[in-house]
Length: 164
Image (cartoon, rainbow, N blue to C red; front, side):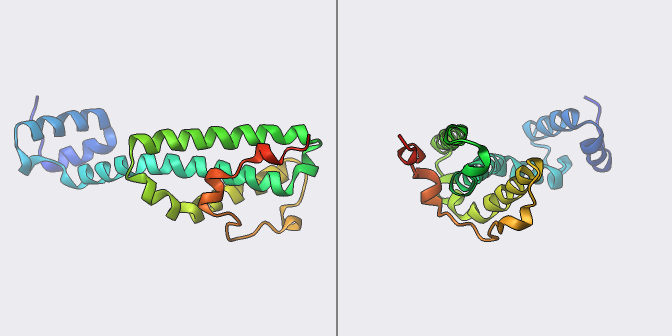
């Protein structure tokens, strides 16, 4: 492997990421710590730690969006059966979250504190859904603050709320 100076290695981060990884890995294996691009490496490690949390937040946003649709927009969906897809979506998102939490138990403590971020995403999706269905989101007063608790998002059984 040809030797790069620190500046060339830093430039490689943006130009050829896989090669940047390969070179830094080799430098670490050789214990050539003074040549490692520590700034970008530490940023990448931090991002790795956040990626699974981001995925959980994304699934939580889906849950919140569909809970809110279930509670407020069933009449816009047409029929009671139209809301069944929201139920499936909530259940699938919960399953995905639980799978991730089984693999990374430390996220169990972190995810509940991300409810506001998940709601912000859900709110945007709700507004988009309303616009996409030719409604003015301003007329629906979707709350700024999440109307659900984390516990409710993760455990409320919408199937029990189906009308027979």
